[in-house]
Image 1 (cartoon, rainbow over the protein chains, first blue to last red):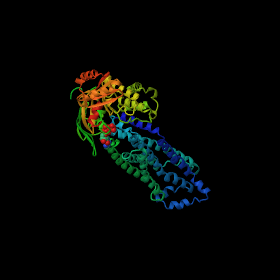
Image 2: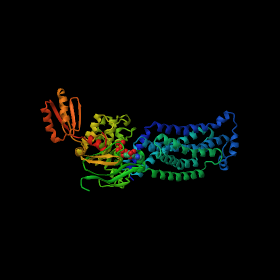
Image 3: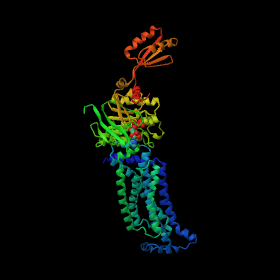
Image 4: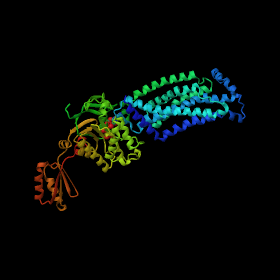
Length: 273
Length: 312
Ligand SMILES: Nc1ncnc2c1ncn2[C@@H]1O[C@H](COP(=O)(O)OP(=O)(O)OP(=O)(O)O)[C@@H](O)[C@H]1O
Ligand SMILES: [Mg+2]
């Protein structure tokens, strides 16, 4: 593997990426909403509920429909704290995963389909770079920014959660072990999922927009996690998160293997027209 | 393979579904030559370039470029060839310098040589003053020059140029042609030039291959092809207005004259071979025609091109 050439491609892709508002605006705005605004609001829920005249006791009735494990984990908190922990630690957990997923999809769409659309791919294919080097470099140039945004987002989220919930919690309560696993084990795999799906889609479409829009379907499994937890089917605990990560990594491996097979000069050229 | 042969194709063929893009192409190119692929849209020029660089696989045939097999030794080969693609394929969101530096690194130029090489190219291609501007703001001619610079960044032994002057104004086109000529003459690079511009092929190329629907129709030096495939010599006679009628009647009466056309006091004649020109002049002058000028016009590549394609 020619590491220098790969580094050149990654650096070029990131530079090109940074120049496009269609890409950078969602990459900054969406994480800010999900990882700063949303947790800040969630921390204010108990006092908002009290002001609205709703009895906090309703939380106990709600929790009775939740899995036993979750009830046990929340047992030591008062009612206001239960609301905060439920929102910040559990319900927003699957939302967090949307960030690496989205960033990886947007960047991969720009790097794979966008390169085709901008017609810059052909010159790249005439270079001495091997197909594997080119593919791995392009995968990295989507995966690295996704991980950077996800980890910075995780730090911000931790700060906002602890700060905004301080009046209720009175101590540092975030991140939990489950969240650490989420950030360092599941988020990279989720990025791989968005990336792998977009690579496959990009092989079939002609423009960045098409790839980006079709790539959005990978959000569905994440939404099912959101709903599954809200309705009490399951909840985000360490075991579930580790298992989720493992299955995602397996899916990633499959998607990237398929994507790599499509990323051949012969395949790509026959479509350049 | 003879020492100076850098490219051999033997029975090269490639189809896309039903469409046969390249059909049994056989040819050799020598080092330092400017070799033209001449043909209409869809004749198979671009596909040939892709096959010769190993970015597409042939269905049939053998290719050796610089002694390498493009299919199995693509990376080694592409290190030594440079390709100007049909569309400039530049990163429009980056600057001219960034585009060149990226390719310099991709082609593995030593870090300490990269800057030097890139600056030299910016200078040669007259882009130095715009080096830090984004390519999206460049004119077509500037983009073409930049793409050409990029194709040269690693000093390739063989340069493939796919329609390097298409869409350029005459001044920009001439600048590009001069550069190409210089690359071949002064730097001894082999240039393979795809074009449908006949004048360009004739003025620039040492030899041309005329392609039609993927087939090689003719191959040789432009002048040889013109002589072999071009129709008879064409003669232009410039005569005074008063004696024009007289001249026309003399010429009409001359055996062998196949076509006669007159425009702005110049009468053009086809069908007379070179040896009979003095007799014809004598006959015209003897009949009292005031003759100012007689000029034979050699057949051009254009003539043979149209002859080969059965057009006119
Ligand atoms: N990737 C492809 N998929 C399908 N058909 C193709 C592909 N590439 C070329 N062809 C077909 O092969 C034939 C030759 O195309 P090619 O691009 O090589 O011609 P060309 O001589 O370069 O034409 P032009 O002057 O328009 O650039 C055409 O009929 C074209 O439609
Ligand atoms: Mg072409």
